[in-house]
Length: 168
Length: 332
Image 1 (cartoon, one colour):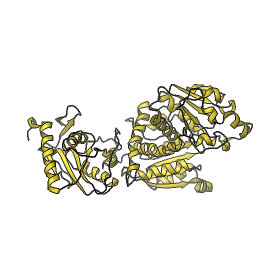
Image 2: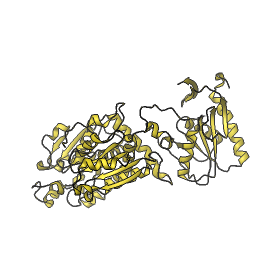
Image 3: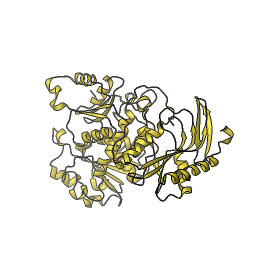
Image 4: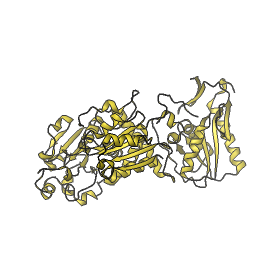
């Protein structure tokens, strides 16, 4: 995918289609959705409405589950996790904006499992980029992107949502 | 050891991050707000089936209590455990110091066991500060009460309780009532309320139990409880610290209650939505009537609950990373 095709609207459309197909394929009954703070939550808000899910959207702030505390210490806090449904035995659609190393998703899964034992978790992301470091990968994606190691892609929002690439 | 030691430079590292938490005095409003915001995020942990986050996994917290305490020690212990830290409780009253080991020897010995944080309570003002000056660079010190000087985590959990119930501080009149002279809680609360921008802080008590020149801390003084409670939003009652009184500070507990005890009738002078707080343990019938302590305006038990989230916030913010000075990159 080229940088010119980083249209968030198109990517959300594709992710929605992929999620619908996955829900049908796995025959998921009454799925609930959780967005990862902050970018994932913005995407999840839109998908939650489009898919017409019955239960309210869950929000996950994975700061307390990150694996880099021993290296960089505490991250400033802005929001708390809110899961307004029982996780036990449920089918969960977990949504994030960018899939990169896989560590955020590992932290998110650890946190979700501290709330209960879900039946299934489907991971949907707006963009999957190269650089995976652990054996976790998304089930549904809006688009893929190959970036150089020093490049980062960032979602800004909530209105309007836009993707930008910068170097660190 | 002296209460007047300048702790503020010791509390922050070169980048302005919390290193030790010894006193509220000299801290910036943004930091106090950040502690409360972090505590707010931690309050979701109690909704989890597994009431724990892995943040301080592999870290060791030592509760070093030279003075007895139930509430403070247990909430610190629970907070550390909810952060997944290992906790060691050292009760010094029955330990090596009674065999003549000096404070510094005790610290050095426990430090040699590769611990990461000391939570210190001591009867001497300045004790936590003294320990913070002498620990290894990777060790953080949290003051859980030193003499008459400070009890900053209690003040922060009280501020967190006020913020949750009143929304903010700007329009608030807060009365602190009773034994101000012996109260480290009162001193820390006065600093916190002024830093957070409370409209007015009133201290109310008999002349013998108010420190000389207490007005210099930025408070209004009053020696009549009925007058002092007029239109206040928050009433903080203090425990009469009989164990710290060597002379005749009050004629009798009975007379003290008659003049400074909080009753339902007296409370009616405060605003209709005023809340009543007490750091505990409560002397029922001495500084507060049971009817008020257990009444619908009392938030005493909420204070205890908030103590866990606030201590989780302070411990996680003060804990040193293994490799300092590295900047974080989002780990997506």
